[in-house]
Length: 305
Image (cartoon, rainbow, N blue to C red; front, side, top):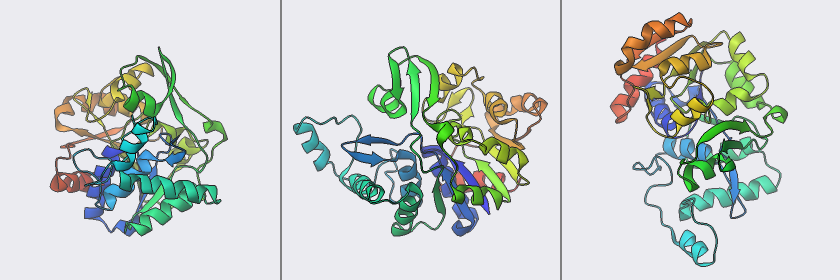
């Protein structure tokens, strides 16, 4: 069993490579839910939807989020009626949120909803929300405390970051499904996702880091930072706000208490000695996932550790 801790676009693309290399039934993705929020009265789970729709083969490839060939009639009408339109929701995308909200209101857990959706869309890998409790990620900025999606999408990540808060995280628990996926894994992978707001909320769950420290599985991470920059998203200002070096060395430092191996890009090969001085073995390869071949090649390197 391979268990992947996953955020959004980077993790979804990495998982595309993994299921080219091993049977998808042998893969479990533990997905960040700190991005979840309510808009138009609907429960929206961005990372769960990105991972599910990517593995279902229906993601908008140009964006890495949303559904391919979607239309936006409902959003246009919401705008006419005075509703906020800063979060771009297509008509097919809205169907996910409408049904998720209805199921949650009927008493289903987020885990049950995620499993129903992935089966309906033909995804064979298991997709597991990190917890069933709401645990919104808030970004503390000079403009006040903002939900992560407001900071990233509505305000385009322009605000200076002063800190990050995982609301309600102390009262949340990893689900039984997540605990089982970690306990039965031969390999645990931290996907190339933002270490602060994608992987960070998962690791902040009570007891999660201790589980990783005590695990007999090999634990491998893929650095989302290449040549001092993030492949996608605001990882750099968020890492800086938490005092992390914005290099692959900073990624190793963030995970060093449980990490066995860090996979870094060839352009960062010179950082290998610094990473290994932290007690983490560094493996150098091409980590840029330009297409299916590169995704599979990266997955092979990771899975061979």
